[in-house]
Length: 215
Image 1 (tube, rainbow, N blue to C red):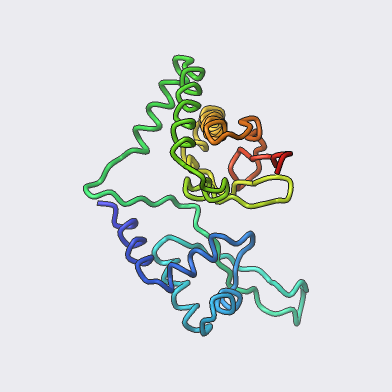
Image 2: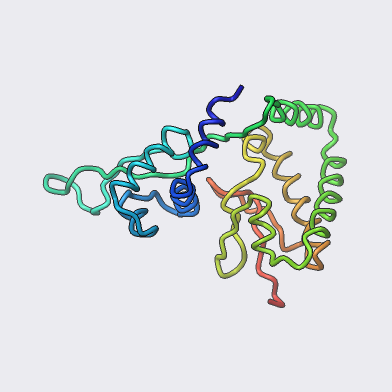
């Protein structure tokens, strides 16, 4: 049994902890205890307690750096900051190893040169998912799929890759699958599938969705 995932699920059952996790996860920068407390209207000691519990559960990780912008004597000690953990956690009862299956499928596809078939299947699945999304706005649709879209003014940068683990081991395969999935979804929603394009950025999804010129 995956005890780490059970601990994570238990930690997020607390509504204050869940709000703190969502705030830190949505931030573009590491978050201090004071900033998190002020944003959520909490006492700093309470925020610190819950943030550290999220660290213990493997949902957040701690970094330390000076935030004053000054160095040398008198610049103060490094602040304790929080960011979303890179660890992936899943809860399946009884345990299921879908990640292993995905790695084996990916290895088989690469070994036998079946990328074209995989991308075709991804495009078709994207159309199915997009057709089922109804009239949900595109950012909401992407958020529900785990992409965490961020409006950059000229389009949507996807802050999270739902296929992160697979993309680390099989980047061309997973990123190509992701691209075709999103293009199919956009097409089914009546939008230009070409808006989805590759633009790899460290720490982000490899695909971005460009602004629709008709918006």
